[in-house]
Each structure stands twice: as C-alpha cells, then as structure tokens.
Amino acid sequence: MATYTKISDIAKVTSLSAEDLLLIETAGGTKSIRYADALATLIPQTAAAHNAIFRGKNLNNVYTITQICEMINSGKFADLFIGDYFDVTINTTFTENETVRCVLAGFDMYLKNGDTSLVKHHAVVVPKNCFTATAKMNSTNTTGVSANPDNPVGSVKQTSADLQKAAYEGSDMNQLVLPIYATALQTALQNHLLSFKDLLTHKQSAQGVSMAGANFTGYSSGWEWVSIQLRLMSEVQLYGSTVFSSSFYDIGAANLQLPLFRLDPTAKVCGLGGTGDGGRQWYWLSAVASATNFAICDGNGHSGNDDASNSYGVRPLFLIG
Image 1 (cartoon, rainbow, N blue to C red):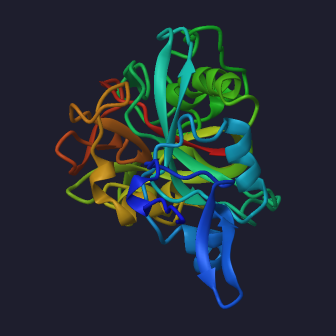
Image 2 (cartoon, rainbow, N blue to C red):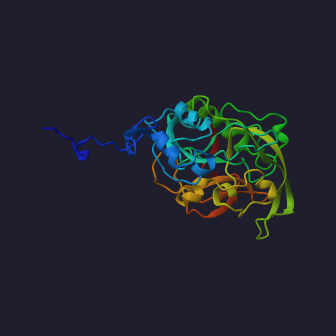
Image 3 (cartoon, rainbow, N blue to C red):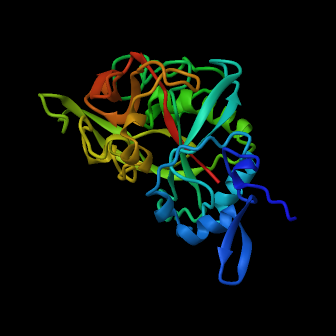
C-alpha cells in the first residue's frame, strides 16, 4: 500500500530566496518554478513596478551585498522591494562599530538625471535611523559661508575653493561630516556605494525674502552640479512638498518624493542610531530656510527649521549598485 506525506507534515520555512523552488500544478503535470521566476511572472521586473510595492523584508542572511547589487545592476530588481533592508557596520571618527540599517527607499530615482546622465541602475538607500552621532550644519548660525572653516572634523579639511561656497554645498555638514560617513560606508558596502551628480545650493542671499514666509529673510540664490556620494534629503524627497525651503534652488533635481515615505509615512520618524524603533530624533534636511536656519524634520514628525549651529541627527540618502 502506497504511503503519502501530508503537506502539513513537510518542514516549513518563513522566508524565500531567489533559487528556492515552488511546486505548481500545470496542464502538463506537476512542475517546479524558481521563486525569482514566479515573482517575475506576477510582478513586472522594472523599477516602476518595484517602486509601487512596500514589503519591508529583512535581507540579512538571505543575500550578500554583492547579490543585492547584482539584482540592482540587472535593472530588474528581482527579489527587492521598498522597505527591504540589510545591516552594515561602520567605523568613523565619530563612533566605532556602529550598525546602520540600510533601507531600500527607491529604485532608479536618479536614472538619466544629472548634467552628465546617470546610466547605472541603482537603489536609493536611507538609514532607518540617524547615525549615532549628532552634528551641526555650521559652527555658527549662518547658512552663508562657514564662519569657522579652519576647524575640520576628523581628517577632512575644506579646500580654498570650498571656503567660498555657502548654503548647503558650503556647509560644514556637507564639506566635513558627510565625507567621513561616505568613506566608512564605501568600505562597509564593499565598494558598491555610487557617486552621482546632483544640484546643490552654493550661494545665499542674506537679505532677500525667503519662500518659507513668516517674515524669514535669506534664501538660496544659486546652485551647481556636484559629484557626491551622500546628501541630506530635500523636503520634497521626504514630505513630497516644500515647507521651509527658501527658494526653488533648494530642490533642484531632488524633486520627487522617495517611494519609502509615500508607501510608509511612519518611516519619516526615526531614532538616533541602531536598528530599533525607539526614540523620535530631530534630523537635518538640505534646504536653507533663512540666513541663519536650515530645515529639519523634528521628533514629532512635523516640518521645522532651526539654527544652523544646533546639533541634530544626520540621515542622508545614498545610492548603491
């Protein structure tokens, strides 16, 4: 007499990888299909389709960073969706052995952008939480040229050309803080951190009327294409609109809301360091709000602005591929 194994008696799994096989019943009999191929049949393998689906899967111990980037480089994004995440460990002059949870926030958001077109497929990554160390936008309350340019952070020092820049590009945050994190992330991501061209504000008018309203004075008055690896998010990338941005120069090419924040608005609120959900940390955005203030997202999730010399969270975006 034949014996049979019940489906309920077969060992169960709680996650699937691309090479796992699924059994299906077809007109030609019982067959198997790779999980990745099943997804490709059900969901178009395009950035547009994957930007429309939030999953939030833990990719740790499922794929290596290289495998994740291979799926990105193909332009099909296979088993990758918005909200999926993986962890890396970085070491900087600010902290050692810091765990950063890297959340997939959008696919090909910068494709074909830039004064030189970006042709490489990529994923936009935003840390789940701010880095552990807080930082100032500038050493004094100005969105103009830094008042303390000879006080470098870590091993990075501004060049003479950098010293003439103002607004976001000329800020201590962009010139001194973010490069340190870029170096650490490049190592942690096994050289999969991409450089890309973006429009950054580099001039400021201290006397003009800010679009932030409420009698704010001072606004961004110029921009230029810059090759970067990390940048603070614009208000549009986070909220989907401007609130305290002083002028159109504050947005530039950062003019689309990232799918992560459209599909999961709770991702806007984050903690300080680590991978957990605890805490509600204020963090900087890239927009000039006035001659003295930059834009922030505060711990309550509401749009705000504050003096450039205050220390708040650092939560930049970056591209991998």
